[in-house]
Length: 322
Length: 105
Image 1 (cartoon, one colour):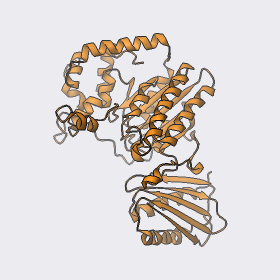
Image 2: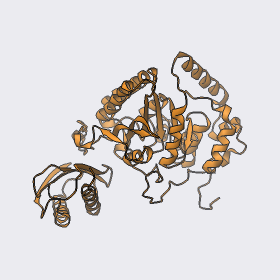
Image 3: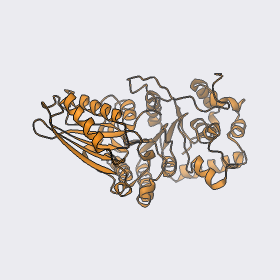
Image 4: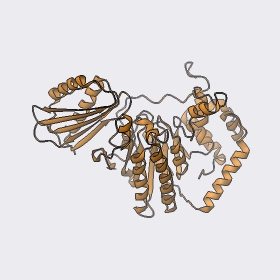
Protein backbone atom coordinates (compact mmCIF):
# COMPACT_ATOMS: atom_id res chain seq x y z
CA UNK A 1 0.00 0.00 0.00
CA UNK A 2 1.17 3.47 -0.80
CA UNK A 3 2.32 5.20 2.39
CA UNK A 4 0.71 8.43 1.25
CA UNK A 5 -2.66 6.80 0.68
CA UNK A 6 -5.31 7.97 3.14
CA UNK A 7 -6.06 5.42 5.86
CA UNK A 8 -9.22 3.44 5.38
CA UNK A 9 -9.32 4.23 1.75
CA UNK A 10 -10.70 7.02 -0.32
CA UNK A 11 -11.29 5.87 -3.86
CA UNK A 12 -8.26 5.75 -6.09
CA UNK A 13 -7.46 9.09 -7.66
CA UNK A 14 -9.11 9.49 -11.04
CA UNK A 15 -6.82 8.68 -13.93
CA UNK A 16 -5.01 11.76 -15.15
CA UNK A 17 -3.42 10.32 -18.23
CA UNK A 18 -3.94 13.29 -20.49
CA UNK A 19 -4.79 10.69 -23.11
CA UNK A 20 -6.44 11.98 -26.25
CA UNK A 21 -8.41 8.79 -26.64
CA UNK A 22 -11.85 9.56 -25.18
CA UNK A 23 -12.34 5.85 -24.36
CA UNK A 24 -9.37 5.84 -22.00
CA UNK A 25 -9.52 9.21 -20.27
CA UNK A 26 -11.03 9.44 -16.78
CA UNK A 27 -14.85 9.30 -16.74
CA UNK A 28 -14.81 11.30 -13.50
CA UNK A 29 -12.78 14.12 -15.05
CA UNK A 30 -14.52 14.16 -18.44
CA UNK A 31 -17.30 16.48 -19.55
CA UNK A 32 -20.67 15.01 -20.50
CA UNK A 33 -19.86 15.40 -24.20
CA UNK A 34 -16.49 13.67 -23.81
CA UNK A 35 -18.20 10.76 -22.01
CA UNK A 36 -20.68 10.34 -24.86
CA UNK A 37 -17.86 10.40 -27.40
CA UNK A 38 -16.01 7.65 -25.52
CA UNK A 39 -19.07 5.54 -24.75
CA UNK A 40 -20.71 5.28 -28.17
CA UNK A 41 -19.42 3.85 -31.44
CA UNK A 42 -17.03 6.41 -32.95
CA UNK A 43 -18.81 9.34 -34.61
CA UNK A 44 -22.28 7.80 -34.16
CA UNK A 45 -23.73 10.40 -31.79
CA UNK A 46 -26.31 12.80 -33.18
CA UNK A 47 -27.73 15.38 -30.81
CA UNK A 48 -31.37 16.33 -30.42
CA UNK A 49 -31.98 19.99 -29.48
CA UNK A 50 -28.29 20.84 -29.72
CA UNK A 51 -26.73 24.01 -28.31
CA UNK A 52 -27.41 25.98 -31.49
CA UNK A 53 -31.16 25.52 -30.87
CA UNK A 54 -30.77 27.65 -27.72
CA UNK A 55 -33.28 25.98 -25.42
CA UNK A 56 -32.08 28.00 -22.45
CA UNK A 57 -33.32 28.03 -18.89
CA UNK A 58 -35.92 30.80 -18.59
CA UNK A 59 -35.20 31.17 -14.86
CA UNK A 60 -31.46 31.53 -14.30
CA UNK A 61 -31.13 35.11 -15.54
CA UNK A 62 -33.39 36.28 -12.73
CA UNK A 63 -30.72 35.01 -10.34
CA UNK A 64 -27.87 36.69 -12.18
CA UNK A 65 -26.59 33.35 -13.47
CA UNK A 66 -25.51 32.78 -17.07
CA UNK A 67 -27.45 29.92 -18.72
CA UNK A 68 -25.92 27.03 -20.68
CA UNK A 69 -26.85 26.39 -24.33
CA UNK A 70 -27.81 22.79 -23.52
CA UNK A 71 -29.03 23.51 -19.94
CA UNK A 72 -26.59 20.87 -18.70
CA UNK A 73 -28.47 18.03 -20.41
CA UNK A 74 -27.28 16.55 -23.70
CA UNK A 75 -29.75 14.22 -25.41
CA UNK A 76 -29.59 12.33 -28.67
CA UNK A 77 -29.10 8.99 -30.32
CA UNK A 78 -26.09 6.91 -31.20
CA UNK A 79 -24.89 3.34 -31.59
CA UNK A 80 -23.45 0.97 -29.05
CA UNK A 81 -21.73 -2.02 -30.66
CA UNK A 82 -23.89 -1.37 -33.70
CA UNK A 83 -27.15 -1.19 -31.79
CA UNK A 84 -29.12 2.08 -31.87
CA UNK A 85 -29.61 3.59 -28.40
CA UNK A 86 -30.99 6.84 -27.09
CA UNK A 87 -28.65 8.66 -24.70
CA UNK A 88 -28.92 11.44 -22.15
CA UNK A 89 -25.90 12.93 -20.36
CA UNK A 90 -25.85 15.39 -17.49
CA UNK A 91 -23.06 17.97 -17.28
CA UNK A 92 -21.99 17.90 -13.64
CA UNK A 93 -19.84 21.01 -13.97
CA UNK A 94 -22.82 23.21 -14.85
CA UNK A 95 -24.65 23.99 -11.58
CA UNK A 96 -23.65 20.57 -10.24
CA UNK A 97 -25.68 18.86 -12.96
CA UNK A 98 -28.81 20.06 -11.21
CA UNK A 99 -32.22 19.41 -12.78
CA UNK A 100 -34.14 22.48 -13.96
CA UNK A 101 -37.15 22.89 -16.20
CA UNK A 102 -35.51 22.56 -19.63
CA UNK A 103 -32.92 20.03 -18.39
CA UNK A 104 -35.74 17.79 -17.13
CA UNK A 105 -38.02 18.31 -20.13
CA UNK A 106 -35.28 17.13 -22.51
CA UNK A 107 -35.02 13.83 -20.63
CA UNK A 108 -38.82 13.42 -20.47
CA UNK A 109 -39.01 13.92 -24.24
CA UNK A 110 -36.28 11.34 -24.83
CA UNK A 111 -38.01 8.83 -22.52
CA UNK A 112 -41.22 9.26 -24.52
CA UNK A 113 -39.31 8.89 -27.79
CA UNK A 114 -37.88 5.51 -26.74
CA UNK A 115 -41.39 4.07 -27.00
CA UNK A 116 -41.43 4.87 -30.74
CA UNK A 117 -38.38 2.65 -31.35
CA UNK A 118 -38.91 -0.92 -32.60
CA UNK A 119 -40.55 -2.96 -29.80
CA UNK A 120 -37.58 -5.32 -29.35
CA UNK A 121 -34.92 -2.59 -29.52
CA UNK A 122 -36.00 0.02 -26.98
CA UNK A 123 -32.87 1.10 -25.15
CA UNK A 124 -31.89 4.29 -23.39
CA UNK A 125 -28.77 5.18 -21.40
CA UNK A 126 -28.64 7.96 -18.80
CA UNK A 127 -25.16 9.25 -17.91
CA UNK A 128 -25.89 10.66 -14.46
CA UNK A 129 -23.91 13.52 -12.90
CA UNK A 130 -26.21 15.46 -10.60
CA UNK A 131 -26.75 16.75 -7.08
CA UNK A 132 -30.53 16.75 -7.62
CA UNK A 133 -33.04 19.51 -8.25
CA UNK A 134 -31.76 22.98 -9.21
CA UNK A 135 -32.59 25.26 -6.30
CA UNK A 136 -33.08 28.33 -8.54
CA UNK A 137 -35.97 26.62 -10.32
CA UNK A 138 -37.00 24.27 -7.57
CA UNK A 139 -40.70 23.81 -8.34
CA UNK A 140 -40.09 23.23 -12.04
CA UNK A 141 -37.24 20.88 -11.13
CA UNK A 142 -39.34 18.85 -8.68
CA UNK A 143 -42.11 18.54 -11.27
CA UNK A 144 -39.49 17.46 -13.82
CA UNK A 145 -38.26 14.65 -11.52
CA UNK A 146 -41.83 13.37 -11.14
CA UNK A 147 -42.41 13.56 -14.90
CA UNK A 148 -39.14 11.76 -15.60
CA UNK A 149 -40.01 8.91 -13.20
CA UNK A 150 -43.49 8.62 -14.73
CA UNK A 151 -42.04 8.52 -18.25
CA UNK A 152 -39.41 5.95 -17.16
CA UNK A 153 -41.99 3.55 -15.76
CA UNK A 154 -44.14 3.94 -18.88
CA UNK A 155 -41.12 3.26 -21.07
CA UNK A 156 -40.13 0.21 -19.02
CA UNK A 157 -43.69 -1.09 -19.11
CA UNK A 158 -43.39 -0.81 -22.91
CA UNK A 159 -40.33 -3.07 -22.77
CA UNK A 160 -37.56 -0.46 -22.80
CA UNK A 161 -34.24 -1.13 -21.09
CA UNK A 162 -33.01 1.99 -19.28
CA UNK A 163 -29.46 1.88 -17.95
CA UNK A 164 -27.92 4.44 -15.60
CA UNK A 165 -24.15 5.10 -15.70
CA UNK A 166 -22.76 6.71 -12.57
CA UNK A 167 -19.19 7.88 -12.06
CA UNK A 168 -19.23 11.66 -12.43
CA UNK A 169 -17.94 14.28 -10.03
CA UNK A 170 -21.38 15.35 -8.76
CA UNK A 171 -22.39 11.73 -8.12
CA UNK A 172 -26.12 10.95 -8.35
CA UNK A 173 -28.13 12.47 -5.52
CA UNK A 174 -31.51 13.96 -4.66
CA UNK A 175 -34.04 13.48 -7.45
CA UNK A 176 -31.19 11.94 -9.46
CA UNK A 177 -31.05 9.11 -6.91
CA UNK A 178 -34.79 8.56 -7.35
CA UNK A 179 -34.44 8.45 -11.14
CA UNK A 180 -31.54 6.02 -10.81
CA UNK A 181 -33.74 3.75 -8.69
CA UNK A 182 -36.25 3.59 -11.57
CA UNK A 183 -33.64 2.32 -14.07
CA UNK A 184 -33.55 -1.28 -15.34
CA UNK A 185 -29.91 -1.49 -14.34
CA UNK A 186 -27.08 0.67 -12.98
CA UNK A 187 -23.38 0.71 -13.78
CA UNK A 188 -21.21 2.45 -11.20
CA UNK A 189 -17.50 3.17 -10.86
CA UNK A 190 -15.60 3.41 -7.61
CA UNK A 191 -15.76 7.22 -7.81
CA UNK A 192 -19.52 7.12 -8.45
CA UNK A 193 -21.74 7.93 -5.50
CA UNK A 194 -25.44 7.13 -5.32
CA UNK A 195 -27.91 8.38 -2.74
CA UNK A 196 -30.89 10.62 -2.15
CA UNK A 197 -29.82 12.81 0.76
CA UNK A 198 -26.18 13.79 0.35
CA UNK A 199 -23.61 13.53 3.16
CA UNK A 200 -23.49 17.30 3.85
CA UNK A 201 -27.28 17.46 4.15
CA UNK A 202 -27.38 14.52 6.57
CA UNK A 203 -24.69 16.14 8.70
CA UNK A 204 -26.40 19.54 8.82
CA UNK A 205 -29.78 18.01 9.69
CA UNK A 206 -28.77 15.19 12.03
CA UNK A 207 -25.43 16.34 13.40
CA UNK A 208 -21.83 15.32 12.86
CA UNK A 209 -22.18 12.36 15.23
CA UNK A 210 -24.77 10.87 12.89
CA UNK A 211 -22.63 11.40 9.78
CA UNK A 212 -19.33 13.21 9.34
CA UNK A 213 -19.41 14.53 5.78
CA UNK A 214 -15.76 15.63 6.06
CA UNK A 215 -14.69 11.99 6.56
CA UNK A 216 -14.15 11.13 2.91
CA UNK A 217 -13.44 7.45 3.54
CA UNK A 218 -16.73 7.16 5.47
CA UNK A 219 -18.60 8.97 2.68
CA UNK A 220 -17.22 6.66 -0.01
CA UNK A 221 -17.78 3.43 1.86
CA UNK A 222 -21.39 4.52 2.58
CA UNK A 223 -22.53 5.93 -0.79
CA UNK A 224 -19.64 4.97 -3.10
CA UNK A 225 -19.65 2.59 -6.04
CA UNK A 226 -18.04 -0.43 -4.37
CA UNK A 227 -20.61 -0.43 -1.53
CA UNK A 228 -23.52 0.02 -3.94
CA UNK A 229 -22.24 -2.89 -6.01
CA UNK A 230 -21.72 -5.16 -2.99
CA UNK A 231 -25.20 -4.64 -1.56
CA UNK A 232 -26.92 -5.05 -4.93
CA UNK A 233 -27.76 -1.37 -5.45
CA UNK A 234 -25.85 -1.39 -8.74
CA UNK A 235 -25.71 -4.18 -11.30
CA UNK A 236 -22.22 -3.71 -12.70
CA UNK A 237 -18.93 -2.17 -11.62
CA UNK A 238 -16.88 -0.19 -14.11
CA UNK A 239 -13.38 1.22 -13.99
CA UNK A 240 -12.99 4.97 -14.32
CA UNK A 241 -12.95 5.19 -18.11
CA UNK A 242 -15.46 5.11 -20.96
CA UNK A 243 -14.22 1.80 -22.38
CA UNK A 244 -15.15 0.03 -19.14
CA UNK A 245 -18.57 1.71 -18.91
CA UNK A 246 -19.08 0.84 -22.56
CA UNK A 247 -18.40 -2.88 -22.18
CA UNK A 248 -20.55 -3.02 -19.03
CA UNK A 249 -23.42 -1.30 -20.87
CA UNK A 250 -23.15 -3.64 -23.85
CA UNK A 251 -23.32 -6.63 -21.48
CA UNK A 252 -26.26 -5.29 -19.47
CA UNK A 253 -28.24 -4.49 -22.62
CA UNK A 254 -28.02 -8.18 -23.50
CA UNK A 255 -29.63 -9.16 -20.20
CA UNK A 256 -33.35 -9.84 -20.35
CA UNK A 257 -35.20 -7.11 -18.53
CA UNK A 258 -38.75 -7.52 -17.30
CA UNK A 259 -40.89 -4.98 -15.54
CA UNK A 260 -44.17 -6.26 -14.21
CA UNK A 261 -45.96 -6.93 -10.94
CA UNK A 262 -44.11 -10.17 -10.27
CA UNK A 263 -40.68 -8.53 -10.62
CA UNK A 264 -41.70 -5.59 -8.44
CA UNK A 265 -43.09 -7.82 -5.68
CA UNK A 266 -39.92 -9.92 -5.73
CA UNK A 267 -37.78 -6.78 -5.50
CA UNK A 268 -39.73 -5.51 -2.50
CA UNK A 269 -39.28 -8.88 -0.81
CA UNK A 270 -35.54 -8.74 -1.49
CA UNK A 271 -35.25 -5.25 -0.01
CA UNK A 272 -37.30 -6.25 3.05
CA UNK A 273 -35.03 -9.23 3.63
CA UNK A 274 -31.92 -7.10 3.16
CA UNK A 275 -33.16 -4.57 5.69
CA UNK A 276 -33.92 -7.31 8.23
CA UNK A 277 -30.47 -8.84 7.74
CA UNK A 278 -28.30 -5.72 7.54
CA UNK A 279 -30.43 -2.88 8.91
CA UNK A 280 -28.81 -2.76 12.35
CA UNK A 281 -25.23 -2.61 11.03
CA UNK A 282 -23.67 0.72 11.99
CA UNK A 283 -21.04 0.89 9.25
CA UNK A 284 -20.46 -0.42 5.74
CA UNK A 285 -17.61 -2.57 7.10
CA UNK A 286 -20.08 -4.49 9.27
CA UNK A 287 -22.36 -4.98 6.28
CA UNK A 288 -19.52 -6.29 4.10
CA UNK A 289 -18.47 -8.70 6.86
CA UNK A 290 -22.02 -10.07 7.05
CA UNK A 291 -22.07 -10.46 3.28
CA UNK A 292 -19.06 -12.77 3.64
CA UNK A 293 -16.15 -10.43 2.88
CA UNK A 294 -13.16 -11.85 4.79
CA UNK A 295 -11.33 -8.55 5.39
CA UNK A 296 -13.82 -5.68 4.92
CA UNK A 297 -11.28 -2.94 5.68
CA UNK A 298 -9.35 -3.94 2.54
CA UNK A 299 -12.27 -3.34 0.16
CA UNK A 300 -11.67 0.41 -0.45
CA UNK A 301 -8.04 -0.20 -1.45
CA UNK A 302 -8.80 -3.27 -3.54
CA UNK A 303 -7.80 -2.94 -7.22
CA UNK A 304 -10.68 -3.35 -9.67
CA UNK A 305 -9.85 -6.90 -10.89
CA UNK A 306 -9.66 -8.21 -7.31
CA UNK A 307 -12.86 -6.38 -6.40
CA UNK A 308 -14.64 -7.93 -9.40
CA UNK A 309 -13.49 -11.39 -8.25
CA UNK A 310 -14.89 -10.65 -4.80
CA UNK A 311 -18.22 -9.58 -6.32
CA UNK A 312 -18.34 -12.78 -8.37
CA UNK A 313 -17.70 -14.87 -5.22
CA UNK A 314 -20.59 -13.17 -3.41
CA UNK A 315 -22.86 -13.55 -6.43
CA UNK A 316 -25.87 -14.90 -4.55
CA UNK A 317 -25.82 -11.89 -2.21
CA UNK A 318 -26.70 -9.56 -5.03
CA UNK A 319 -29.61 -11.00 -6.80
CA UNK A 320 -31.06 -8.85 -9.51
CA UNK A 321 -31.72 -5.52 -7.85
CA UNK A 322 -34.71 -4.70 -9.96
CA UNK B 1 -24.45 39.60 -14.47
CA UNK B 2 -23.47 41.67 -17.49
CA UNK B 3 -24.13 41.40 -21.22
CA UNK B 4 -21.53 42.68 -23.67
CA UNK B 5 -21.37 42.75 -27.46
CA UNK B 6 -18.34 43.28 -29.70
CA UNK B 7 -18.37 43.73 -33.47
CA UNK B 8 -15.22 43.40 -35.55
CA UNK B 9 -14.22 43.16 -39.18
CA UNK B 10 -11.66 40.37 -39.60
CA UNK B 11 -8.92 40.36 -42.22
CA UNK B 12 -10.54 37.43 -44.02
CA UNK B 13 -13.27 34.82 -43.64
CA UNK B 14 -12.38 31.74 -41.60
CA UNK B 15 -11.78 28.61 -43.71
CA UNK B 16 -13.50 25.31 -42.92
CA UNK B 17 -16.86 23.64 -43.39
CA UNK B 18 -18.32 23.30 -39.91
CA UNK B 19 -21.55 25.20 -39.33
CA UNK B 20 -21.25 25.35 -35.56
CA UNK B 21 -19.20 24.15 -32.60
CA UNK B 22 -19.43 24.33 -28.83
CA UNK B 23 -16.45 24.42 -26.49
CA UNK B 24 -16.21 24.55 -22.71
CA UNK B 25 -18.75 24.38 -19.90
CA UNK B 26 -20.36 27.15 -17.84
CA UNK B 27 -18.71 26.49 -14.50
CA UNK B 28 -16.67 28.40 -11.97
CA UNK B 29 -13.62 29.84 -13.73
CA UNK B 30 -14.75 28.37 -17.03
CA UNK B 31 -16.99 29.37 -19.92
CA UNK B 32 -18.81 27.92 -22.91
CA UNK B 33 -18.57 29.44 -26.35
CA UNK B 34 -20.87 28.62 -29.26
CA UNK B 35 -19.33 29.30 -32.67
CA UNK B 36 -21.71 29.69 -35.63
CA UNK B 37 -20.83 30.45 -39.25
CA UNK B 38 -23.80 32.74 -39.88
CA UNK B 39 -22.37 36.18 -40.77
CA UNK B 40 -21.48 37.61 -44.16
CA UNK B 41 -17.91 38.05 -45.34
CA UNK B 42 -15.41 39.17 -42.79
CA UNK B 43 -17.80 40.24 -40.04
CA UNK B 44 -17.30 38.78 -36.57
CA UNK B 45 -19.60 39.34 -33.62
CA UNK B 46 -18.84 38.20 -30.07
CA UNK B 47 -21.67 38.32 -27.53
CA UNK B 48 -20.82 37.74 -23.88
CA UNK B 49 -23.08 36.96 -20.92
CA UNK B 50 -20.88 36.94 -17.84
CA UNK B 51 -21.58 36.24 -14.18
CA UNK B 52 -18.94 38.83 -13.23
CA UNK B 53 -19.78 42.46 -14.05
CA UNK B 54 -17.28 45.26 -14.55
CA UNK B 55 -14.64 43.70 -16.79
CA UNK B 56 -15.82 45.07 -20.16
CA UNK B 57 -12.43 46.65 -20.91
CA UNK B 58 -10.61 43.32 -20.37
CA UNK B 59 -13.11 41.45 -22.57
CA UNK B 60 -12.64 44.10 -25.27
CA UNK B 61 -8.85 43.63 -25.26
CA UNK B 62 -8.97 39.81 -25.23
CA UNK B 63 -11.46 39.68 -28.10
CA UNK B 64 -9.65 42.30 -30.20
CA UNK B 65 -6.45 40.30 -29.80
CA UNK B 66 -8.28 37.08 -30.74
CA UNK B 67 -9.76 38.62 -33.92
CA UNK B 68 -6.34 39.91 -34.95
CA UNK B 69 -4.64 36.53 -34.36
CA UNK B 70 -7.21 34.18 -35.92
CA UNK B 71 -9.23 36.32 -38.35
CA UNK B 72 -12.55 34.61 -37.54
CA UNK B 73 -14.53 36.27 -40.39
CA UNK B 74 -18.13 35.01 -40.75
CA UNK B 75 -18.44 33.80 -37.16
CA UNK B 76 -20.92 34.74 -34.48
CA UNK B 77 -19.52 33.67 -31.12
CA UNK B 78 -21.81 33.56 -28.09
CA UNK B 79 -20.19 33.16 -24.68
CA UNK B 80 -21.71 32.18 -21.34
CA UNK B 81 -19.06 32.95 -18.77
CA UNK B 82 -18.75 31.61 -15.23
CA UNK B 83 -15.88 33.92 -14.31
CA UNK B 84 -13.06 32.61 -16.52
CA UNK B 85 -9.69 34.35 -16.45
CA UNK B 86 -8.54 36.11 -19.65
CA UNK B 87 -6.06 33.34 -20.49
CA UNK B 88 -8.84 30.73 -20.25
CA UNK B 89 -11.05 32.88 -22.49
CA UNK B 90 -8.26 33.16 -25.06
CA UNK B 91 -7.68 29.38 -25.02
CA UNK B 92 -11.40 28.59 -25.45
CA UNK B 93 -11.65 31.02 -28.38
CA UNK B 94 -8.61 29.41 -30.02
CA UNK B 95 -10.07 25.94 -29.39
CA UNK B 96 -13.37 26.92 -31.06
CA UNK B 97 -11.69 28.44 -34.11
CA UNK B 98 -9.62 25.30 -34.55
CA UNK B 99 -12.81 23.18 -34.56
CA UNK B 100 -14.56 25.53 -37.00
CA UNK B 101 -11.55 25.50 -39.36
CA UNK B 102 -12.01 21.73 -39.76
CA UNK B 103 -12.88 20.66 -43.29
CA UNK B 104 -15.44 18.11 -42.10
CA UNK B 105 -18.93 19.12 -41.27
